[in-house]
Image (tube, rainbow, N blue to C red; front, side, top):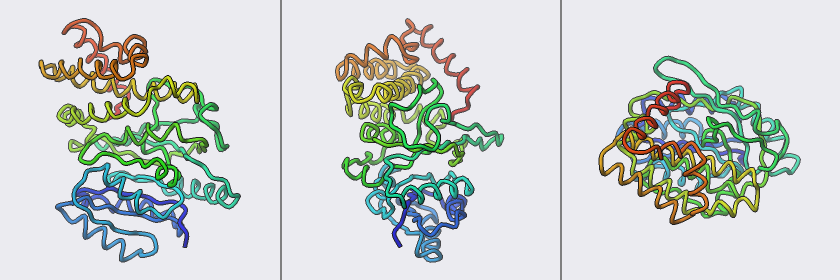
Length: 342
């Protein structure tokens, strides 16, 4: 049976909890999906769990075992092997809402039967705190037209706290493959590249106001935990540099002013993240890296540098001296308490 949608689940030492993720996909009762579990060189029982699901659901689940390459290589491996017309990544510690998934699949089938190809489907995702159970949806209902095919030029401006994540999109598989696009190995935070590099090639978008993806945050071992982000700041810097290398954003403006504004917004967030965690570290080495990443942007794309350095939220990191950096970090703390984004 031809598959409509491939789910890739990159999994590393996920044996204790990945069943919740897989079961949430199987609960859609869909035969035209496939689930690729990519065991990324796990040292626990992830391989056994993946093989057990593949044996029980041979027409839906496939297990792929690879040497450890990191989350990005898990995404790459799923993309290489996907048989679905569309492709979605689901982290092994997250879940999808089965009822929302059923509604999405129904609409995807309808459009596919009409011969309509969509480059990118978009739905909402929900932050779910593991420590207190609180939920905060990230909704795009005031950004995208609801349930009609649109382009970037049909979108409204994103609020400072709004951004697209891997959790909120489904790409057409062949679009990704046509870009020869692969994420770097052994690098955290590569989802930011996944949500940046393909965007200029996305010509059709379809949004449904569904809280589809449940994004569980708050565990100490997560990559978005503050301590881990500080520890892995070099990887955050590497991803940001790759984003800077990908495009001169002024060229994107010629294609779509709305897309330019969003990609500028996304790059601003990345520069802010690098800046804030280097300022939290505060060592001489960290402050040098802080200056270096801004100089890197200046050398690669001077117009974008001027735009971000003087007119964006990232410009707050330019407050003078150590007191300025402390004020910048204090502002981050306030925003973090309000939005609880990691």
